Image (cartoon, rainbow, N blue to C red; front, side, top):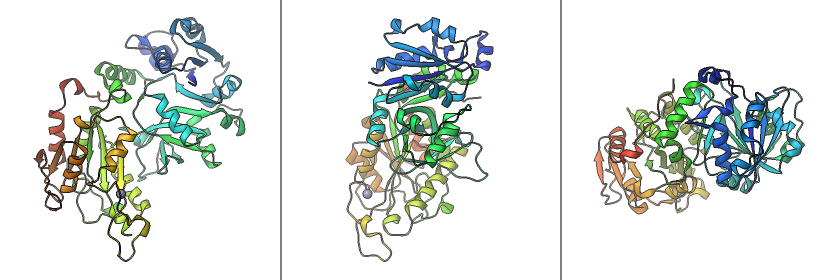
Length: 447
Ligand SMILES: [Zn+2]
């Protein structure tokens, strides 16, 4: 299928100390199996059998464990650095062994996902480099990706962020598809350099096609004893498999205005965005259980010319920042910017169209299902209007009407929700109460 490159040169001092053994970080056992072995097996099971290990610290331990790879049914070649020169330096040293397109994994990060989906994305965007990106529960101390609607990365905001900055909660998870051409064309420094911190910002600034892939996948580094414990807990609870997307996932589709945030008429400015009480904690409860939290919102204010795509983006950055302050995140925000009725001053003519995405049409639910593997019949829709309830009915999803915002009094559809509750916290409690016990294991809090 393609080539798999694993950066396996890490020393892992803190981990080795905790394990009481002089082993390189990629050899740390995760539920009894070295992480590196887990990654090789994952690649092999998806048809990636040509594997390049970039090694440095205690390379002898890694070589003697894997040899040529025949025991695992793969071919392993090694590139050994005499001095560590950063993730970028290691790749540069491996140039002559690299395929025209290859996957890059980190030897201290447990990954589980469908590589084919990411490779398809990479090829369809004609990208030079694609990175896996996802929201996490601590974006304030993460390097954050800024991308356009098609996924093209326009900037990376390194941690620490400026005071008061509001960014999308979209983290570079350090899993890449790279075209070898990218490494050949650019001028790579001779000094040690890090891929994420140095090379990618440089490539963005000189116009290379860098894209952020979003979709199902579990990716978590285990470079400290605490993080290793969390990864092991996720493996045991089934969280890793659940997030991999291999089995369709449970999702909760959530309306925005009047359900997550205060209804303020036609919200058009980020300054007016205010979370409803308990909304963040409720969404965090979904996050901890690996249930997708997806925002589905009609925003005709754009078609009417009362707001812009830029301002809408600012509103969502604010929403993601406010949620993140309470350790919560949404997995995706799906927006219909259209409006069917023409003839108003200041309107944007090309958005004044009947579309398939304006609720109660199900286009936004379909978009979400294109991005994630979702089990619709086990999912829920939560909203404050009859449009939400009717959209859920058309999509075949059970629905919950909340008594915040419009409280279902818009009278547009003769909607009959499956449940009526006071607000989002109660709605999410009901969803969780109806989730089978085996899916309820939560992620442990990280120290
Ligand atoms: Zn639309």
